[in-house]
Length: 160
Image (cartoon, rainbow, N blue to C red; front, side, top):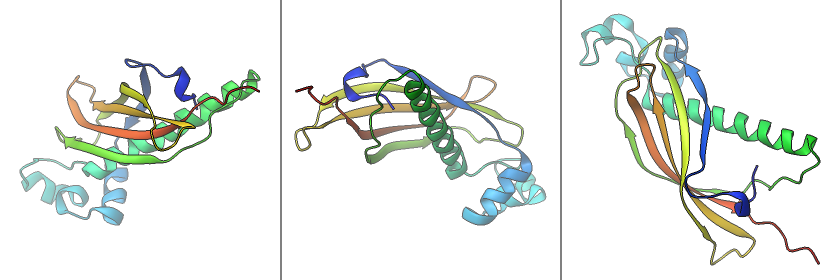
């Protein structure tokens, strides 16, 4: 993971891509969001969605998995180059979560995160705050999810 000192407004991370399959949509929804248009194709066809679609929570969870994998790979690569890596710090939550369009079985969602704000933390001098706008876009270029998150990110320690 990058240090706060290395992050700039406008930095973009293409977190990854996820293909939503019918089986995966039903499996996730059965456990976490068992509304009929997420678990039953016939019922979904009769719903306002017109077909089986993923839970919005599923679209957010897919991003989280991709982000964790991205950060892990980034950190592993930095360590392989002999660089130090910032430690994990807590996220402070997200806001303005919007599910903009349904995600249907077979849709391919590309997730992108862009830094919109950076500032040193007033309460934790060893950290900075980073605000990120994350979006997910389907294979047709249509945005399907967006949210803003804020997290603490470790600052580089001063060398004695």
